[in-house]
Length: 184
Image (cartoon, one colour):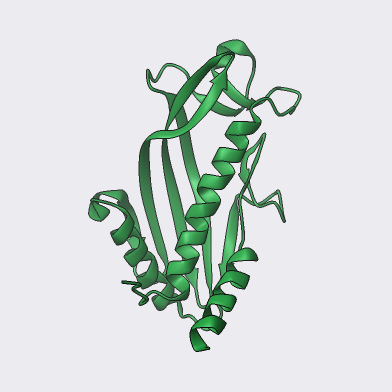
């Protein structure tokens, strides 16, 4: 019964979790489009517990956690980078183009809260010649999700980006909610 109640709590808290949305101006908080971050509410957790849980999350999810962590202030802040060779696939006319990504996330901690923000995101094809932009200037500016008139041109890229980052946020949230749980 205790396990069932915990699972219901976990599912309900994850389903109400903060998310990021792809807009012509980049990744935004859909509840407040002026904000480029989301705040994860974790009542009852101290800044130290949230910091330690985030370090554990990074350590478990990266081969070289010491290399991806680019900055940290104990119990206050962590900045880490990620490189993904086949981040998403976009359609360009009749071709499918694999997109590589490099991005940096900053986590800021307060008692009961974590601020999650993607502070840089570079997306490009395997050659590195053409970038994927949130908003494009035309055919010669590379690939773009929205055109100059802010019309959505690559809905599959928008969905893939949102799914990727929202799953990352959800996984971090799960780790922070119960950092000692090992299901094996």
